[in-house]
Amino acid sequence: MTRILFYLEDYSHDIWRESLLKVAPNIEFRSYPDWGTPGDGAAYAFVWEPKPGLLAKYPNIKAVFSLGAGVDHLTRDPDLPPNLPIIRMGDDGLKEGMAEFVAMSVLMHHRGIPSMITKQRNKDWGRFFAPAAKHVRVGILGFGALGQVAAKTLLPFGYKVAAWSRTEKEPVEGITLHHGADSLDAFISDTDILVGLLPSTAETQGLLNKKRLSLLPKGASIVNAGRGTLIVLDDLKALMEEGHIAGATLDVFPEEPLPRDHLLWGLDNLIITPHIAAITRPDTAAEYVMRNIARIEQGNAPENLLDANRGY
Image (cartoon, rainbow, N blue to C red; front, side, top):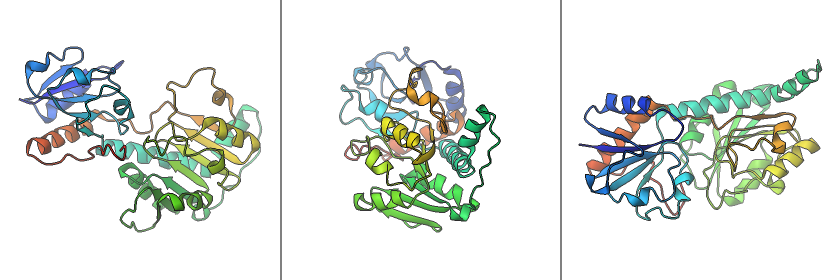
């Protein structure tokens, strides 16, 4: 019998239990803290932000499924067993949610909605005349599974879509691809709306500092729905106040929830969302987890297995 050890704080576990049992009626679903003992037999962990050291107490765990696309909530655990396989979430529901959020955000910045919201607060009727989509350059920073779906979703609107990735990717019709550190600055300089979808690694932390953000054309906008460590927030704030960056939508932050006294809350033309760009959906996630458990049991590699050397 397949045993799943589930961990998610401040949220009902019932919907996750029901979704997994619907896909695989014979599994044994255990909610934390009722995980039993390590001697109960092999198990798979399905978790989000487990307490540091918890996974190390259960050497019977064969692999860990992250409940979200990010895995830094696991890798920052100093006691994480070094050879424990970690599978990143990559279900269709997660991809659909991210594509929806990116499309919404890009359209809002293209049409000047953040500045319209600011004008509304001031009872200002001032108009904004947006250029045609075909004249707007959208850059997707990070071209993994989520970035690829998001980029393709933008194509029907007519945007000039480009994407950057650390390594070379297969060509995609309608999307201009860039890769490697040497091409990053030129990619940013040629972008009107920059969408951050990079994972959190040593190389990406603080990648968008004042020097790089200043490469964006005056009046550009930023959307960050990847990881909160990508942008140096003080630098972004300074460039927005100077008027170099026209607006931003931030869904992720280095500290979450964003502290109530943080200066970003009062910044004009900034939209803050509470890390909801791509919420894992229980029905599609259950199918994804059980499909990959089957792959592991059959001796095959699971989808989206974390490469510890790359950090994603």
